[in-house]
Image (cartoon, rainbow, N blue to C red):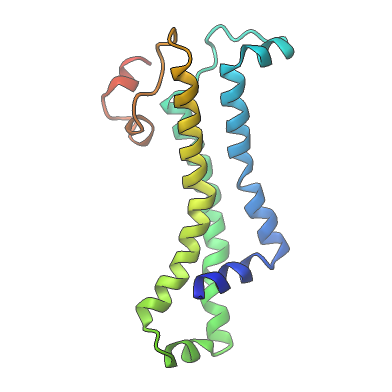
Length: 166
């Protein structure tokens, strides 16, 4: 109940909703970029020849995740304090805690709102882009720069098959 109420309160604000939609812009740009890199038809329509100059690699995913994480940081910095201060200003914390709801359940409800926001703007788009890239790379067996596992974009300093081919 707390998480549903918290999300509805956040999305009642038009600037917050606009910024939440803006957080999806890097995902849409990444989606278009991955499609463009792998689609020879799109390259012909736009009259662009890549010559393997543009690649989607672990470094690209690291840059994508860093942009998304900064946007998520601003999203949480905007949403987080307002959720608790509204309850404190309206003296509704005492009402919540007078019911059969413990402090940890109250905090878990508030943190679950932030978790839902972050997973909707960072985690789910990153996983979708990763699987799209993996699917399109599998369709092109002549490419040698394909991503073999997700650890390459999460830890670029680690040795592995992704970094051995860069």
